[in-house]
Picture 1 (cartoon, protein in one colour):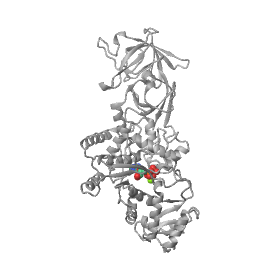
Picture 2: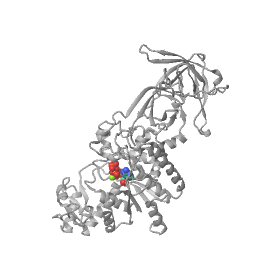
Picture 3: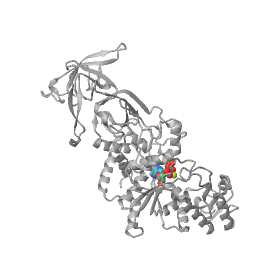
Picture 4: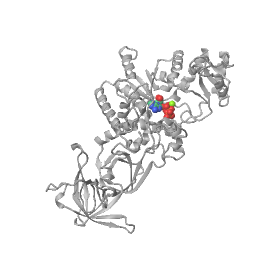
Length: 584
Ligand code: ATP
Ligand code: MG
């Protein structure tokens, strides 16, 4: 499996990325049928040696925010291996912290995973459905002398924990009789104590070299309303206690998580070994995805802050690294899956160039997006020798592939072209329209600029042109050539639209690395153009499905669109601009 390795130098120019991308395509094409990485190798050998008969994985988000592009790596891995090896993948909400979790996040996560193209069938689960079983297993540990109720405060527990160099100290409550532990734990559940007054801890080894094994907390008291269990519980299991046991309940065979849980694996195994579970799941860790300038390294908490502080318009603001934002922006889910595939799975952490994700998006859209004409900054053109009430329907190709078909675009005497496609006093290399110059209007006619109309400030507000009726379709029968081909729309037929252009939200590859991440935000990253003009067929594109505005980039309709007032988001430009901005 091909990957960008950490040792590859920062890419200033697009060329190197292109080379890597070419390698990537070749490698992916080669091993499309037999994808290899250390996790797939483990699964293959587990299956061939009969250690497991069916592969069961899970994707376990905590519903405390929206999913981002990093989560997509985990989703593609978990659902991907289940699919490839004929197993299944559960979607499980790890909803053990009611103070941070909300139904809004659950709904958004379900939408996002589905949008990415994955299906969990009837296997949608919630850790909160297992609270009773988890409680019973906690009691089992107490009875076996493997857990105790501790009266120390959170601060005291921390003080007893020791450091990487020094062992911890036993809690004075560690050797409570089993019967007392059972009674206290029962009272914890019954709501007889305040938040933080007591916890349940595993009894392992305060001198362990692994701090996670120093009598970790299994249950804490939290008098909080849970979105699903309401007020039924006032004690909640910690991640460490809930996660592996939920895996066991669901008979997960391969519990795939990110590297920060590597040091938790001994505890994961310790618990599963001591509990009367039906299954024996195993945890494997892989490197988190990090993508330069995306902000995913900030984590959900700080992404939420951007939303709450109004820095962005919402979790799905197209500048956010969330899947909802990518979708709103018009990113095809296939491109994200392709990206995950190209990044691959490994143990080494590395920062992926944003240009790779952009390449995957462009590559898909280039092959699939319909071509349309839209004028972002309109300049009026009057064709003086074209009859006033005549409308001609021009046949225009929907894209480079013959299978994409043709459409009709109305052409009339008054048109709009792009302001930047005209210069009154052009430099040498400018091949677009200028006084006396002839250009082609895409799939329509050759026109020549004969006059320029200005307002009282001297700004060009209108061009007067003539057209050559012999050039219908965009070619001259006498074989004369023009150097420029412009996109255009008919003024009376064009649809008004607002177009939103986005630059990266962050000015640093890893925002917040050298201080407050809010200092690394580009406050000018949204540019709203109003008064844009679109060809009429754009009234009917699917919401969020990107089309190519010829010569401009890829754009998708935004849900803010209303009849008569369309709103489009720029999904991505036509060319890599990371080199130009000095980023990437
Ligand atoms: P954040 O740190 O952004 O808050 P999280 O890891 O706390 O994210 P979870 O809801 O716990 O969010 O994540 C669900 C799953 O996604 C976990 O298995 C986690 O390991 C995985 N995951 C999270 N971030 C990444 C990432 N950047 N790359 C790959 N997998 C990730
Ligand atoms: Mg987490």
